Length: 398
Image 1 (cartoon, rainbow, N blue to C red):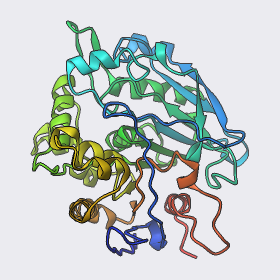
Image 2 (tube, rainbow, N blue to C red; image 1 turned 180 degrees about the vertical axis):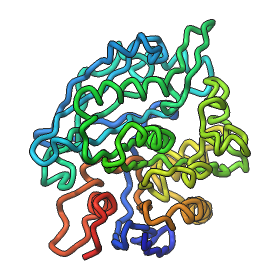
Image 3 (tube, helix red, strand yellow; image 1 turned 90 degrees about the horizontal axis):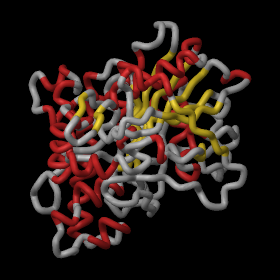
Image 4 (cartoon, rainbow, N blue to C red; image 1 turned 45 degrees about the vertical axis):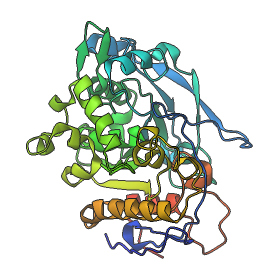
């Protein structure tokens, strides 16, 4: 990959972009915040959007016999919209995000939500951005088969254990495989092109499960993966601690992930560190695209300046709405540079793609206003959707 790199200050218009195949992108700083609390991140239907595609829930009843169940023991589910025309044998699989549960108590609480039980899942979800079925909104993938896999295990589709005393099933890895088996039986086995992607904790899932996904298909099928807002850093918080590392340690130990995380990592690092993408992306063999903001809003509020590290609340305005003073901006510059350094070696491989921009955002492929705004003038770069398409289809820069 011929990566073009440049960076300016935190307050600059253009901060940093690495685009696949030498495509140059320009991105304005945009302030928005799309998460609700530290334990659950949930997207809402974009207001003012007409004719949003709503897709019904399918439950995988056969998964129960395989032990592939949600935290509460209910069967997993997904939403499938069939492709058509030239997209009939092409598939996009999106793994839902929703943070993690990092203790038995938190997992018990989580099982009483749609992120722990299919009995509480919405019967329909809106498909927008990369899941849109409109060519004007999603030019490269609009007519593909599109699937959103519901997230109900609390550990990025990675666990395979149980806690009988707490009546909790940690079967995320089994859930992933059972859903894929069900989709294979519904035609995905004939796919010519597939793209596994996910948002937030689902973006981490797409990294962890990428090679497993590739192994399901014959070598003639083009298989690639994309992580959207899933590049969570083992960053130092404003108190000098590692808030996200503490959370991840809870997730790993509660669900026994030391037995399921990549052995290429756990053979030489503590299992908790192997839940961080920076320590595993270079071992992923399947082509991968990293999409992330250098100022990821979820990470800034929950990893850089969470309430536990900011008891005085001095970072509240900065972490919640990007109203930062000079010293806070300088600290965030350091976070940005840590992220850029973490993807440097990964970006050197021609099979991979990276797009890191300056938006105050968390998850950009799901949103129409960030995926493909449709308001660019002729000859202007259209940003994320074009960059991802250029990488996937190996289109040369025009």
